[in-house]
Image (cartoon, rainbow, N blue to C red; front, side, top):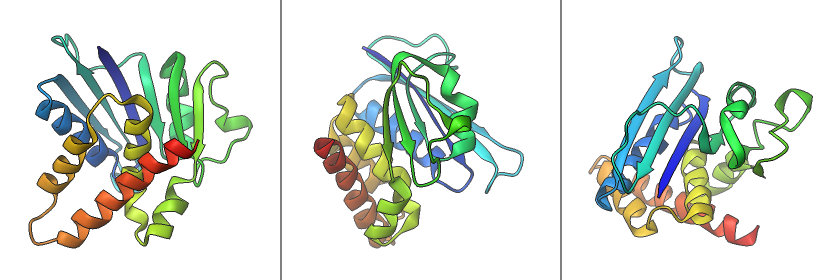
Length: 183
């Protein structure tokens, strides 16, 4: 098994955190993993993306030139990375911020899901968990990692004095998984 993933969005949307949670959870399962972050010059509000590769075997390069899965959190990211998705790859679009139109059309041959991730995060009470909703949706669709390892990683990565962050992120992750089942 090998899964090459690109996650992209604006700085401040939790792009790097989403990638780190995937990488840490994969290590809990004794998988080989790489995580390659790339920040835009502006950082918060600028472009940000990361590339994650999860495999049962050694990984020769952290660079993902052709992604099996692409998670985009805004329209500019869809425009920039849609051609990096392999034919019949999985595309998850945050439809709250990337309304489908001529400039944001996904590749026709991809398995595409437009999910209002930011709207769902707002309904949960914290706009900042849209990334974790996306992560739950992705894990439910691909089943590449065990949900208990994702939940444990969320807990491990949160500051110990911020139990509220742990709970809202777990809730967001489970909501994303639930959404995929409804699809």
